[in-house]
Image 1 (cartoon, chains in turn orange, green):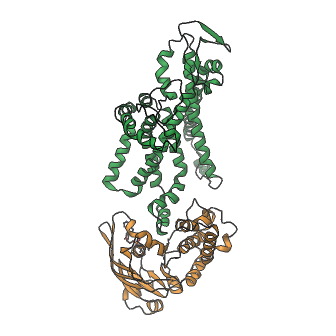
Image 2 (cartoon, rainbow over the protein chains, first blue to last red):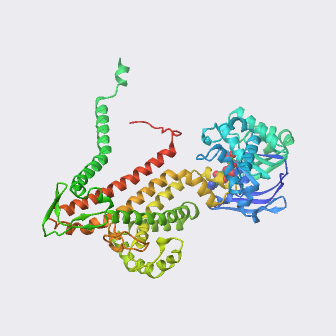
Image 3 (tube, rainbow over the protein chains, first blue to last red):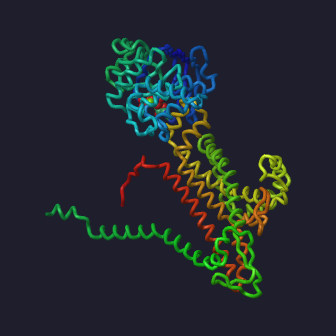
Length: 250
Length: 341
Ligand SMILES: Nc1ncnc2c1ncn2[C@@H]1O[C@H](COP(=O)(O)OP(=O)(O)OP(=O)(O)O)[C@@H](O)[C@H]1O
Ligand SMILES: [Mg+2]
């Protein structure tokens, strides 16, 4: 089941460069939240703080507080955080030396699921959730790299779902996909959001409008506006938001 | 008409290209020519010894020049001093065993060091550690040998060896006596020290080249650093690592000076435990060449050539095996792209 995320005065640095300048934001459980904003405004940095991936970058630093449900994210072991906060990257990154099956099964195995039957069931379930099962069920032993870009991205989603996370972060998951694959991923998000907290970064405002319940507009490392997707796109409160969503800059 | 002449390649460009292709071809084939030449010479030099001993050259245990100043005997059409016998098995075993020990020790240490260098440390610490590894690669083997004699062998004899004998009941090869410390284990340790920098440097470079987004993919799934290295990076660098291990193995089998100094120079015996004196093929060749020259029948020199031939073959075989392993994993999935010149 999804968990809510409460971000308080989050600041993030790359070296000396302050990239997130104090973000306050509540992400609701079992909802899809879109993050929009011009390139370089800190969208990726923001969601990489939510699974503590930001701190793996050399010379990076984070301050502030993030609560996941009622736990302090920065008091947890980062490895544990990433088991409950899954992530899908902009560039599909299935493990290239592994089969389709093993891509999904690897993390399960490492979590102690050894029995063949259970493993298979979990893999199948994840692949079905990612709407990939029918396309790969006869070729589970093929290398993951034999899949198309869109299939690879859905494999990455299946891989993240296999861990049964509470939160799913998606950083421009469809930016490298064709319209057909994009549609399938969007349908997927639609189907998943009743049971996961989804945060999706996107440059595609139609996409945000289609899949997200709430949308946040970032600019220069600050959260400018955050609210109902429909409201943010039709009646933005801030002129900068309006300029962005009407395509006048960014 | 004018346009057509413009488009044709000028004659000197054509000649230059032909020269380039010829020169490149010549340089590319020179390693093969060298290898064939060396193998040929060693092979020709070995033949009398191989005829004298037959297969017993590989299975015999006694290495003896016979009475060099006594009567000559003729066997299988070749002449040698009476009593001459060249059984290389102890040296073959010594070479394989000491280099295997070296690899068993060196592989995990190199992998760990490479992992730390590639992923854990940064800045000054990283360059300092890298320099240390490179310096280690540059230590002359005779210096390592000296250190082996003065420091390592006494330590093996008084501390490491006695400790390992506790496992004797489980693994008979670890049973004592430990002896002087000059022998198989110390040779393996010294060789490990020579192999570690080779494998570490390659592995570090390979690890650094694993694309970040694959590693992040693993990290984002909640894998620990070690799990990421083990399950994502290692499969990625497997081919390169096999190559560097083969390279290190070749180095360990061919190493002469340091081993000669710490091996205990066993003759006519197979190692009976981890601490026995041994000899390796390379060490014996270097050690005995001088006295072999005194054999008027030249059989002793031929025998050493045959030893060199075996060493050469073993080294080539390990490299070939590495190549096969690499190719098998590659299968038909990958197609090399590129422009052929
Ligand atoms: N690894 C890094 N090292 C240094 N600076 C970085 C690094 N990654 C990002 N930055 C900087 O941080 C800022 C925010 O980057 P971020 O990737 O979060 O932007 P983004 O909103 O995701 O942009 P895009 O839409 O192009 O993906 C940028 O100015 C960028 O140059
Ligand atoms: Mg980004």
